[in-house]
Length: 257
Image 1 (cartoon, rainbow, N blue to C red):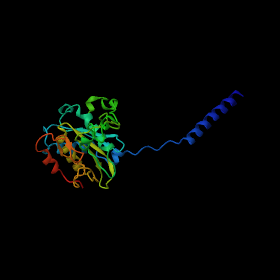
Image 2: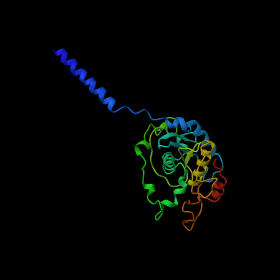
Image 3: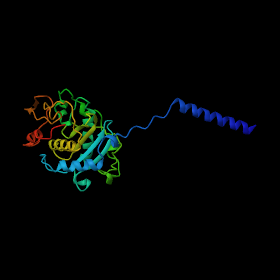
Image 4: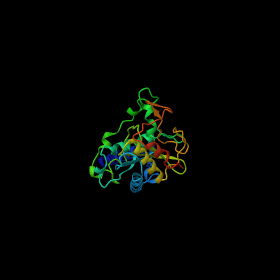
C-alpha cells in the first residue's frame, strides 16, 4: 500500500511537470548575430590597424575599437598597439559606448554618427539630455580578467555595454543588402581623428552601405560636419574642429557604397 502511494505521488509530480512544460514551451536559442553578420576579432583588429596607420589628423595615437550587434551586444574588442597599455585605458569603454550610441540612434533608413550628435545635445539643443540616457553598465565595463582586454575573449564580449557618447568615433554598420547590422566605435585620439579612423575601418570591413543621413553629403551621409561658427552649427548637426586640416581629411574620406 505504501509503495503504491509513493508511485502515485511520483506519477502526479511527473504529470504536473509535463503539463507545465507544455504550457510554457522553451524559446528557441537566439541567433548568434555576431558570428553570422559581423566581423570577428581578427578582422576588426586588422582593419583598425590599417585605418590607424593612415593620415587621420590628431596625435597619431594607438586606438581601441569595439563592434556591437543590432541589439547592442558587444561582438569584438580590439586595439592597435602591442599591449593593452599602449592605448588610453579609458578609451576601451568609450569605444564600446560609441558603438552602442551609433547603433542605438540609427535606423534602417536614417543614420546618425556620434559626431552628428554633438550640437544637438548642447544646452538648448533639440536632443539636450540624450547623453545622460542609457547609462553604461559598469559591471560589464570593468569586469576582469584585465589581461583579456582587447583579446578575442575580452570580458565585454556577449555583454550589453550601454552608454551614450556624443563626439566623433561611432558609426552604424550596414551590409551590402543595406541592412543595419550593428555599429563600430573607435577611441584613443582626438574625437576628430577617432571619426576618421572609424570611417576607414568601416570601409575596410565592407559595412558602409549607408542610407540617408544628416551631413548634407549624399556620398558620406553620416560624415562629421564642421559648420560651427561662433558656437552655432548652421545645419544643427555640427562638431568642433579639433585641429587644422581635419575638415579636408573628412571631405576626402572614402565614399559610402
